Image (cartoon, rainbow, N blue to C red; front, side, top):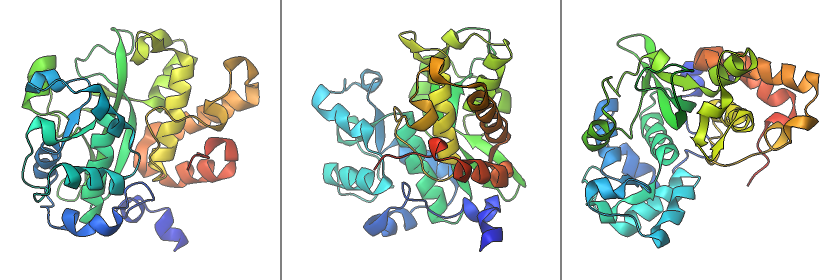
Length: 287
């Protein structure tokens, strides 16, 4: 058992507490196992709370609260309440779950794990235009890493990027196989900022919520996600919830270690788990 917990292909092939669909397992099991096909299915189920206008349905404020749903079981309950068709049937925009990139990534991750495909949620910043860390504002984004058995490698995939969004942002890369330099993990962002190689004010949710505190919170969100406890998009705890002025040099060194391990991704699972379990300030304390 201990060996499998440190083997990424075993560890990430099963649900965690957040991706466990509970009584909705059969809904996910009925879907195909092809990751690209699952991206298209997920896109017919979820609509981004801030992008409904692109689909002819500006999201009303009273529907936006579902974007904060943390668990896949609750997401599927809401999806079925809005439209009881099988999940492979695309919904019109007004009958989709209102979410955001974190919701899309977590739901998609659960779809892959249902079929025994190793997958994990990655937390970082989209660099889809190739600007680099100092090329312009680079905002919060959540995607997935999955193991492609045929290619024998981990592949970054963005389940949210449908044709409408790709056209809107002028996407020039394949969202089903994102080059590693086009997604800046939270760990890579933290280390670059610590070395003075990136401006933390260009990293965040938007221009009003950016900076090193945001990068630090995102770093711990990715650590949790890589331990199969995918947090909410604004969750903070332990070292991510403290004021920067209260952090000791030892705290910063520990965060550097977290960044190096998480930047390496699922292949560094043993280090990722060891760090997560070593200090309660790194683990979520939320319900």
